[in-house]
Image (cartoon, rainbow, N blue to C red; front, side, top):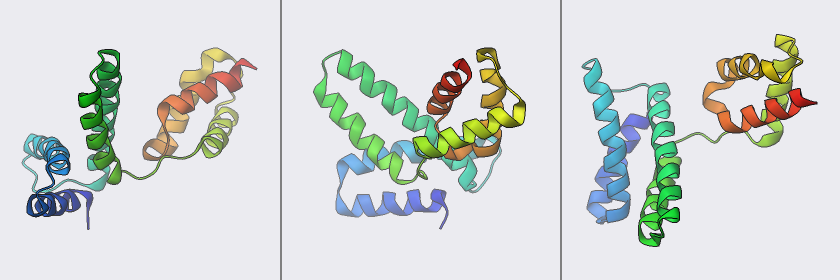
Length: 149
């Protein structure tokens, strides 16, 4: 079953179970999916497109959590964390630090990078090869660290 279909099925199940928190999160995910389908009048979305949208929603929730924590709004932080947990259920796990480090080292070797100014070249190679599997922020940090010496 595709991610698009799983979200729709889970939405129905959450409605039947009257799970308000899960329902809110799934509705926001489905809204993002529907907005994307309307761009080209598609009936459904590929898993690759869905993952991209989910990553964007994940990032937005992370930023919202940080903003609400800084504003002293623990009630909203809890709501955003609950939504984030639901979003992450549909995402594949990102590579751990050791795997990411190996990919970055391979990209450094492949691009013959030696200076800290080559981080962009390394990131391009890493993201091209492992786009959906790697945390870009972690990869950038590791690339800068390895190229710095």
